[in-house]
Length: 441
Image (cartoon, rainbow, N blue to C red; front, side, top):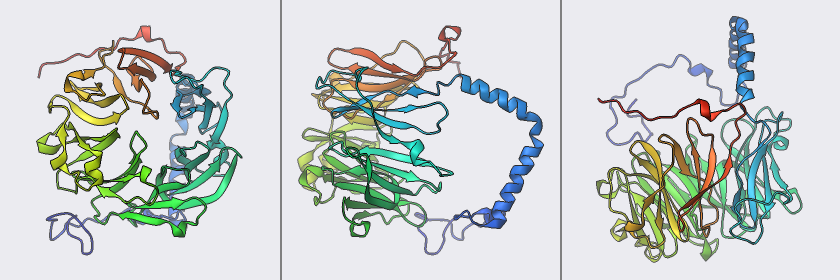
């Protein structure tokens, strides 16, 4: 531990470094091909089976008890995205999810698909996994036109993915594939452009690329490279869909870059606030502003600010241009913000519990309201919200006595409506009581 020649170990690393021998380093086999390692693992597995054979009946009993409380054939909550409702479902006896969609009526108030709406399976992970010893599907992403799907798949377990594109009209895969990808892709402002990341030799996400469908991967354009080994690179779209955000962050510092997708695929990246040690921030977009939640000015629990889009695009969107939306409240920890067209959802913690607040479109601090729930102990978070113009905020709720539940809150009326709840066979909530009790220190 400490200074190592040729490596970035941060400021003032220990020198001379501390050294420690790892007697198990010989077990590292990135290619999973070392017969010495494989033989050792097989021997360990055989030993475990032999020594725990007397527990086989108990294992079966525990497994059956666990399975008895799972609805193996089930359907998850549907969410609206464009003209469709998207959801996943599972089937008893199958190991992987099935991704589906149903058409939604033109009525924007429709919360769930009609019972008689025809289902379209857009991706069956079980078919993707056929003949494979392992299959991890990540980031099933629909293009803006909803006719092409991109998904990332890993068959080896090394968390390096291949991206596959599927034509949902023809039901066939496109010849395009992307190799060596880190996680999922993000679509650009059209149905031809995608953005993805790759890793360095230490499996650190560090490069952001732009790919055009129909072209080979070797023609892709590298938009950004994070050279600092203490930083990882992430990317994603704002809720509005207008901006792609590249987020280069360490545990203590962030630096965000924005691409205006409305300006076309050739649009340049613009840094919002250059990295400054100890300054963390994140953002979302609505209308003429970016909303920024940040620890600026020693706001340990984070505070909400805003900066004009025009300032950011002009290269003048740094912290000196940020203005306060909510006064800093040290009792309110802000973890995330979603900017809808007519209101803002905020998730975080207060009084030891996860909480959600809503701020109306005026962004006036006086409009802030915290959502309340009947139970005194619970977990709540903002759910999937893909329609920025929606009048409701989708949230997910659960407690020690309430299964995972999807609800929608309408800020204009103050109404909360349950749209889905996970069915747990054998559960009788009336047999349990969930309370929060404080003990004096």
